[in-house]
Length: 301
Ligand SMILES: [Fe+2]
View 1 (cartoon, helix red, strand yellow):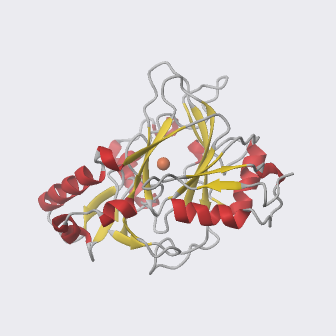
View 2 (tube, rainbow, N blue to C red):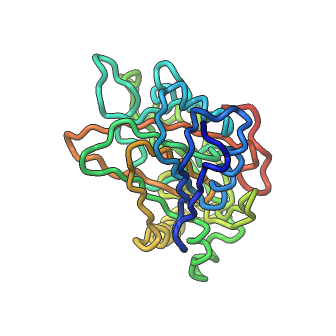
């Protein structure tokens, strides 16, 4: 049985992101365990935590997400685990004649659900099958990027509203056969219409300012022409995605990773052809406002 004195939170080396948590079996934690608040605090402070040596079944994973916050049920059911809709399955492995989950998810810079009016607070990932050659997820600390933003790029974003849309990242499903692209695009637009967020957000807990833009879902800065938007966004993304900003988490068996979508953008690494990959994700709402100035998300999941 883990106790508060056994759990160790090791902060990242200076200038890095991600604390490592050891000495805890999350299956043993009661709902109101004293370890939960330090884990939440570490997510805010270090952007990302890796809880080592976990061994969950699906129900235990959902139970832990419930102890930490409020699990999301993703709006598209083709991503759901068949018995546990809270679990979002990224997989390229056929299971019998059933297709479980969706392959090649998130291989572009993004932050989960920025195309929703109240984006997802935290994302947790618990890999199931590791591809032989690539075991990584890439992250960029957007508070650090904002702090380092050159003056002319800062003038593009301070006080500016950005528009986010998920339409072009939609994964076509079997049920879409015989529908035209126009029908599909219109339907997605109705289901998740474009939303507006400040280009710079203030974290509701730490008060840090972070650039809230991502190549995957940010489609425009409000008030600009099409050409000016293309030019400014290209400059911003080029700066954001510089190699010196990128942190790679190399996965180990038993890792449960949780990060704050307010401060990090992320991207999955590519899986080499012919290799198998499967991971479970549960989105978790902390039920705080996503950024200072908007209301907290309530009861939707
Ligand atoms: Fe993602």
